[in-house]
Length: 251
Image (cartoon, rainbow, N blue to C red; front, side, top):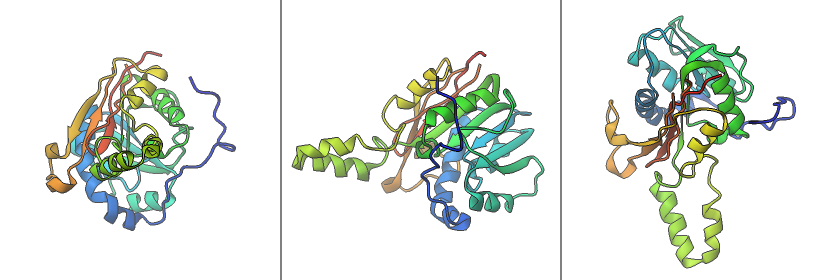
């Protein structure tokens, strides 16, 4: 397990957040397509209390009630500009958006039925601490689901660039391994086991399965995920995003 977390000495998130509206224009269209896939992969039920870790502008949060009649959705993020934007998008009292650090979640043990994290964990220093926190705040038998970019298999431009460089210059092999954390095959599922989640399942999802229209072929993306039951977590690595899904763990 991880060592004690001290928010005063912990490094900050490395993601640059400046404008909620700008981020929505850049990433919102892709996040809205990914959200239903991730929710389907992790699974939610009527009455669930759901935590969205690294909620950003709320693409995943607002997709949750479309999948089930959830009791509440709590989004946490370290970017106040994203939280402010998310709060303007709905007056539904089930939504709450608050500042928080994924590595030190401000909630009691077992506060939620499931937790999601979409395209966030690879930006968090000590992602294992964040996953352990998700496990802690989800009740036994609940679900933990996450997704990260699939740098290795899902972004052809990166793969082609480094494959070509490796042929031209053998020394380029080293930079190929310096991608974002949790993007290597099996890396997420291994972390899920390390924090005590069980029954981990891994799979791949592609943009062609999106319910609200798919990206054009030249920009098709994918996910792979893993899931486990008594607390669930998913991890993926696919054609463009990587997903981590449910896993369970007893206390």
